[in-house]
Image 1: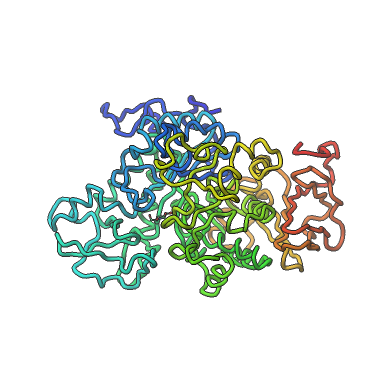
Image 2: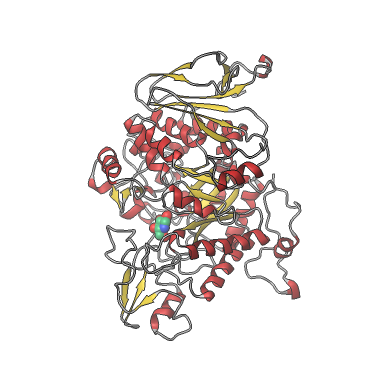
Length: 618
Ligand code: NOJ
């Protein structure tokens, strides 16, 4: 349970009580907000769950999910066993980009509730030891935001330089257009100023000008406001694009990293247990820069890994995954990858080669309507043709590869999508709670719903819903829940080292996650600056290594594993706690069924058989 009396840093304490020196009251402070007790690196062991509040549960019968509804479903979220919620943008917005077009940074969209509703929800979540992070869109605002309304009105108003303006639309031609299917330029003309404004996304989302110190200060104020309210951190949207520079792509610039260091400094100074999670759709070498030297973001989504998981299972070969992981540099101590299969966006194909993109489109796009921007607008289950074994295999990879898993609401029941809806609404339909009216999502009229729920015979709410799956012990939902329980028992999945196990069969992806060993005298060669820092600073961890073996093929496969690094260990399968033959000389043989996987704890010989139970999770 949350410990409201947990010791806090003096400045945080003052903030919590709503006082500043001189008796001033900070606008965002909520006296009595409940923190979650626990260690500062909680995010390295956490499982995240991404929620579209509008799509989760309707608490006031108006056809839209809201904060009251989300609060009402905390029992479910706690039962499922996730550690941290990630809320998609809940701020006032004209909703032309799912809320990523913010028109007021300081309150809640009236459709979703009030700041008080948010406070009550946060306290309830924290009482259950569930943390909550939210999207923070630093790069741009809506064109309806009062800052932009003022900025666009003339060339000499007080906000004139809060956005990026230019006389013509030819500057920075090297910067790519992100939404290449709907935008033809990163510049849009504003007749009132007879100038163009810069936008990396939709033309209704003008980019803020971070060269202007007032913009920087305002954004830092927004960060403090929400952390004072009690958020446990932010997913920082679209961070690579904060600055522009002649002759560059305008991505990953040193000034952008300097800005992130300022944000981190602010967080570290007053909110040491909060987390910054970067959304940077970049290649691994650029991605790791968002950790800085442990002084930028605590976490970063591993974008290039995601499509390669789908590639690997379709090719039935481990290579796409092992290759991208081999290209991924080590990360500083205290940092963590966020890994995911699907989210609220399209399955992005930005960070793959042309050839790989063609392959993914051929394999996964059965209808041109499924294309969205540079990717594929589908949910997990339809991408896998609703193959339960394949879904379990991909989740097993997600739960055991290095990083903290991020689940997307509805994927735990294998919800479908609706590719006839516009933009990325295809994957944002209402959560399916029961076979009742509107899938139990809302008691409003069907015509009022923000989007229609799925009603087809395969994925519709009568066939796929939480209520039915909770009653069925062998449902996918129950299976996911038990996987979360296993993961919780083995923190090595979050914090352990990662080593691929050699196996001649290319369809087998096997690796060992080991507790971090005690620091050794520095071995020269092979490890970069980040790796050395990680090894030197991370404390040794208790526990045994865990061996994970996955069959990426749809046929049964033999796996002859080179376990010579773990001699004399006895593998104990994690889900059933069944003891397997000890590792001996030569390769270790395992046979896996189609898309099968095993996770084994590698017990040392001294472990007593009494430590084991014969069946069940023990
Ligand atoms: C990334 C978000 O995930 C996406 O939904 C949004 O359209 C862009 N950023 C622009 O804010």
